[in-house]
Image (cartoon, rainbow, N blue to C red; front, side, top):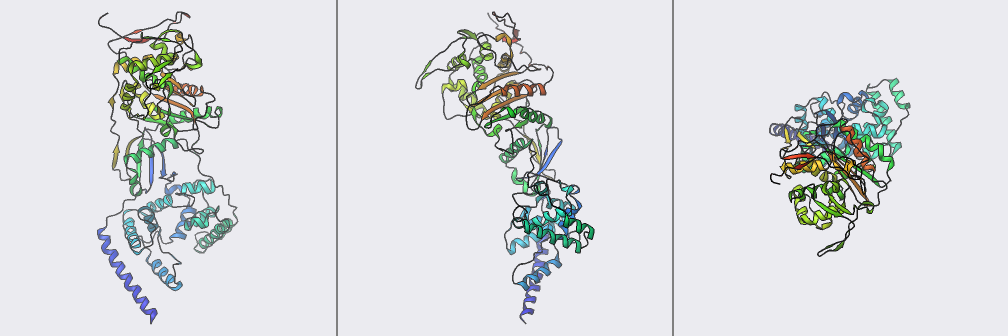
Length: 620
């Protein structure tokens, strides 16, 4: 009698649930989970780069690239009627209901793959009647919107395999160092077993339970005629080669981390769960290849605590086309290119001299270069030093000061301009400092490589500042445009003065200025003409250079502020990058209409300098 009452209650509950499901289906809109948690990246040329599962950094895999054994094993074990039901397996629901009642506890589930995908992508793991009903409703809607192969593909790419591993690509890579298309039945039975309970059946958590589960799944496959006896015996005897190694191909990981950071700033990462995202970036695969190969060429010359960051921007735009945040993403995912703030040394000087030109300086403006102690009000005595304590001990002009990175000339120029004016000007680039000091003349202010590169890109862009960007457009998999880079720019430099500085910044390569010391880049000539400036502190060294085609920023430094072993490596990296990007001479900057060209002659060596420009005076 009691059993009949229970059965009656169950039937009534099912009827009520069915009616509720029917009416709710009419009201709730179809879910948009096309490629859930998926980001597809495209390059600056709109070429496909790769697709990954967000947060897990696993590549997205199309169904045709997943092996038949994987597909058949998953369907047979998790949802054997997948291709015949419409989202809910009613026979399985009723059977599991009676089984659970008979056992007095939940021992058997009835969720289809569609329901599991719905729960992972749209809901949560809360064990409640409301959540289960919503899961059933949305699963029905999903089946009406997407075909079976789409659902299966999305499931494979979103499934959890333990150890914070999501997606079949990462799972195959970690457990077997294989691609999903190469997985056989022996390996597929392990992976599907892990899906069932990752913390229980992962082989590196409990090997014996993993193999036990594998044998159970293989037996089911044979009994259901998914595999024949020969395949069954072969899979049983197949010696599994577990590698437990995560994918180490991270040539563009630093750049993609920068994309993710910008995506979060734009507030668009919230769209990932439902519709996925297609990002067309400013990433240039060829140039990134140059960057990676050149960094690898020099990494063996560095000490253990030394690291490199490189950024390349496109002048006359905000496009960051290549970026490396360190020697090895595997060893350190810290992105030094965008997140590391370091003193910039003498790379500050072009900014100082640009402001000086606006204050009336010309290339003829001279200061005495000798060892000097400055008495600064409210600070005290300050005695900047030139590199290797070498001084001209005579008056030098602006171009010679740039060529040889003379600190005395820079300090005197800074005092003439006023350090507060320098700090105020840097706010145009959103560079701020809580500590204001005249020592800014020697680059004691801290910037990230990206921030410094954007300022040099302003010189390269003839005085127009573009806030650096990694993303051009963002759209979802329903082809809706969610974001398009507005390409905003603002003039932060007078065009004529910016171009004048660009010509003067050729001087670090100019042998005519070899005298009391050598120009800072004399031994690092480039095939095409570049404007450039170096900067060195105790723990870091910089080279920033540009022409009309590329802006390059190279940083070499230590994360713990220890002494650098070889500051010259940054110069070699810059030279190699410049020559790879511009293997032949290109047109330099057009001379403003009110400027004339001139050359200088070294009186000691009789060497004629490069061609520079000067503003034509209307009145003598």
